[in-house]
Image 1 (tube, rainbow over the protein chains, first blue to last red):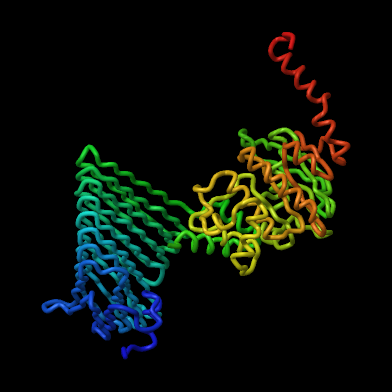
Image 2: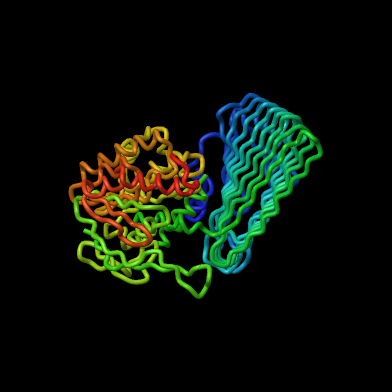
Length: 309
Length: 252
């Protein structure tokens, strides 16, 4: 039985939809220590010897299995850097659920920097879900700085869903990816910042192989006095296709900087970027008001829909 | 019953000091259990009138009375809650909000998927194909229009206002829409319907027709009274003679 307290249990629910011990392989880290770890026949989780973190090795041909590696912090002032490496063999079809929840009731900053590296084998299909959540009434900040590196072999595909809706004060997210021939990367980022929060999200996706493709889409809402920066760069080095999109709603005194970047180093690279920032469209609010919603209720529905996966 | 009493609506014109009158002293009544069609030339103020009724615009002068209550100062939400439904001429698109969500919001309570589907079927959409789709640009004009009407059906208003339901849809979709309005006319008990339209087939199912021109009521009466004056040979001849004049009086 895993020993965690109520706050940690709540955080686990928020970041990984976990109500009990997950099925399949998992590693649950609470306040800097592993509190539960299970490997399966095909998925092996081992702690790193000379650094904090784990190695996850998935055997070639593993299908329809999942790995959960949530992290929860409920102690004020805890700062950690964790390195998790995923080695996914060829021809796998797996779901990886990560995520970090911080509850900080104290006055010191709590910080979790998770550095994830994915080595996706030939023809493998990976779905990666990562949710970030913060709670607690303390003055100490809740800080998450995830670094993600993705190395994709031929004809592999990866879909990444990264969600941060509430409570994280400072985030600096960096995601890099290198795609070989025929590889496909889809990124869906959902972000909402409020209060005095800051969130920076940087992507560098290198399309190195012929037929590789990437679609990086961010939808975000900046409320109150919060600030966001979305910096997505696609580099096309061969016959490839890439699309990046930043679609944002600003409210109150929110501020957003979108920096889409495209670099084509091959005449056959087809790269597109779109970016749109604006307040909620007035006619959307009016439509919902004609259905009987108040202005505030209408705004809430529009934002909920906008940030839905 | 909805009464408009001497409604005027002005907007600032290009010349900043002058006001442009869009609606110029309109008084009219939409009786209970009647389907009333407002028609007239483009730019005559029809859509503005519909938006004034829904509360999207506020009149410069005049009163709007719904079932004996003065709603002139009420906002859109309160009017919706008092029983006014409004279908937009250009349906609004959303990101992430699904057809099911919109119908649920219109209904104002949690409803089952199958209940929501009934409203889509009523507007001639195969519910299964649409219920989980986002109300966004991936839907055609005709699809959006029918979904818009489905939301008004789901809301179940005492007065439903449709602003040019035929605008932006193809002929085949329009055929279906006529049936929707015919169905609503049959089940009008306890409610009334106001449609802004140019379409003869919609005028054909009206109980009463109001012609709005240059911001005023040009004609108002039963369908049998008004319709012949709109579609009859007299008005058509007038158009012809104007055309003849414009091309220099050559024989037509």
